[in-house]
Length: 349
Image (tube, rainbow, N blue to C red; front, side, top):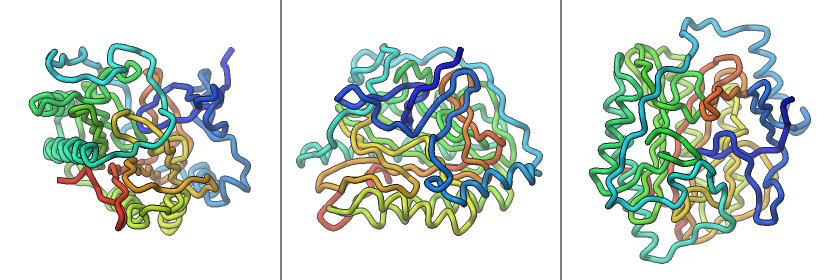
């Protein structure tokens, strides 16, 4: 019999229950049903909004007309080795992820410089990964190239071994919302692919992602990707010391609404630094959560938008998450540092 438990998902949580330091679930609005593999939110229509009802209703009345083949799991190659001399995060070789660490990631000058270094490397790796995106390349080959570049620079690929994740990068194609496991599937002309890179360099994580075009992509996909990118940068533009975190969600949601896109709720941004996932939890949709940004704080913003339904289904691998109606999804992410004048993007070349 399938169990139903409150769950919170972040950029790399997969099928994991997250607890606060008091031992209670951090949030109680998310649920994952093992029997159906559905990832859902327990919100009333008044809270989730009429627009979300319309998004899902639209997909019932007007099924997607695109001719893309639905994603299917490919063959996953063995885990790649990391040299012994490279510093590894403490969760490596444990199938139990640490969850969200209590308290914000705040840094002194030395810590800020370390964050800049890890963020810069993550950005460089992501940029390189993007150049590999062409019809015919396997996502597993992208993973191998990313893995090699990270270890060549003396860093550890943060996803590798996190809660049992088997690869060094996430590759999420077309209807995959996030956490796609690189495998034997070759990219096809017209695909879009999000590549999510996190590196652990000298004890600090830098986390970033972008969605890339593969070959000739149609206008529907191009617009989704561009609007998702705009949502990220509009959210970054309002960040500064003392700003309420809930303004991030409102900014993203307001812009997505203009194009009738759905905003995925089951996955969130997070504090990042010496730990992979820390407070605060960054919600990308309208919300009334408390909390304000602090000087010297680092966290990610990583909105995920969909053309159709915001309902998600998790594959049997307990990581890959796709839209229920197989409509396209796109995501962009940056790691930010709150400064006296606003926010510094750490994950850019």
